[in-house]
Length: 161
Image (cartoon, rainbow, N blue to C red; front, side, top):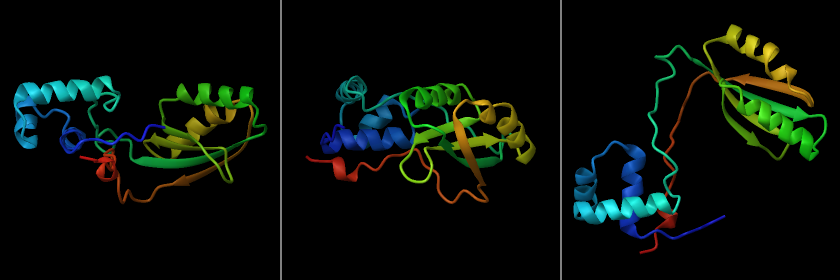
């Protein structure tokens, strides 16, 4: 797990790209106090080094009619490699599952499922999730309100000079 220390300028570049990836190179350069060519070199270096995975558009789930966030805890019958891989391969194919984490604690996986409503979640549960081999139990919790959501990572502790 790399714990690279970023220089202040690189951290500023990443902070600004996290909040607006469509920022022009000229505007980004001005904001961080570099020439456009120097800024572009740094951005390309950060991309090459793997700090920037990709650029995406953040869509509004409410506007798209996807108003239900469901957190699903899944426990498997067995914890062997084949069962874990089989579950993960099946979940990756489910577009309703927008996040999936292998967990410690009471359940083996935590999923975030985005669907239009309760009926759509029931259809997903019955036609897809429960058909995955090796599942021992499923517990679901519907989100009532999103209090905080961000894709921006905290960079403060990674700045070294």
